[in-house]
Each structure stands twice: as C-alpha cells, then as structure tokens.
Amino acid sequence: MAAKSLLRKGAAFVLVIMLMSVTMSVLAAPDVLPATVESTAENLVTLKAPEQLISSTNNRKLPISATAPQGVLVSVYRYNYATGCFHKITTGDVPLESVVGSTMLFAGQVDLNSGMNKFLIRGAYDDATYSVVKFDVNVLNEGFMDRIKGVISNIFN
Image 1 (cartoon, rainbow, N blue to C red):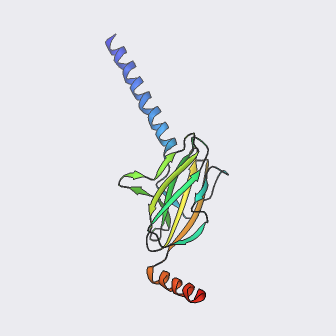
Image 2 (cartoon, rainbow, N blue to C red):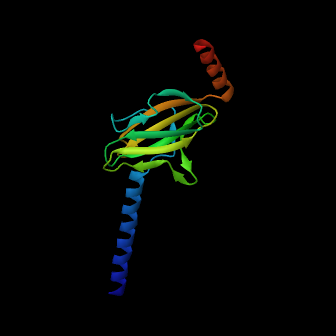
Image 3 (cartoon, rainbow, N blue to C red):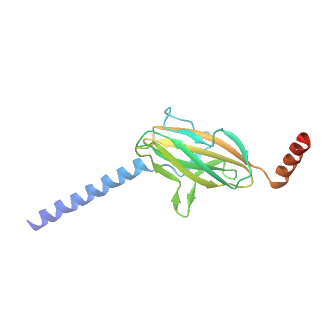
C-alpha cells in the first residue's frame, strides 16, 4: 500500500516537472537569432521608438518602445558583427524582454556603442509564431556634430 502511494506521488511529481518545463520553453525567446531571420506572422510587434528604421544620434542611450497584442513576448536583440547573429540584450543576467500586458506597450532602454548599432525587436506568441523588426542607429561622434553645427551656423549667419 505504501509503495503504491509513493509511486503515485512520484508520478505526480514527474508530471508537474514536465508541465513546468513545457510551459517555460513556450515562453522563452531564443538567446541568438540568425541575421536572416524573418517574421512568421504579421503585426505581433510595431516599433514606435525610434520612429525610423535607420537613424542617427549623438546620445549614448536609446529608448525603445513598441506596441504588441496582450500576451506577446517582446524581446530586444543587438547584432554582433563577430558572430553575424543577433544576440538577446541582457543587463546583468536579466534579458531585455517582457510579456505585454493590457496596455499593449513595451518599453526599454539600451546603451549604444560608437558607430553603427543594429537591433532587432521580436514579438512572439510562441516559438513558431513571431514578428521581427530590424532597425539601425548610428552614433555620431562629437567632431562630426561640431562640423554640422559649424556648417549650419555659417549658412544662417
């Protein structure tokens, strides 16, 4: 009798562990995506900031915002020139991603490197149903900004 009870408890424990691992794998976005990744579904994520897919700035921080349907997991990736892939951005061990709630908004901030920064934002219901948006941000150096200010000053003076 005791062996039968122990067997039931063991089977229940294994079932709970299996269900938890299935749930976790459905909600986890991949850490690395190939540069050629394409959307499998439309309109799961819409980039709001930056407003253009190619932009320039002299700021070292970039706010990112997007809209997505409730329940979509939004993740942000940075292109790694050494690997040729997009890697999920993390701060410490915490990935820049979130499941969108009833506000249907996602917001985050990334640090920019000098020169060209390539990003990808991914909105996914599951591993097979996702949309991606790629965008580039070029960080201009101070010397370049000073030259532009000088040209503008000369034009208007």
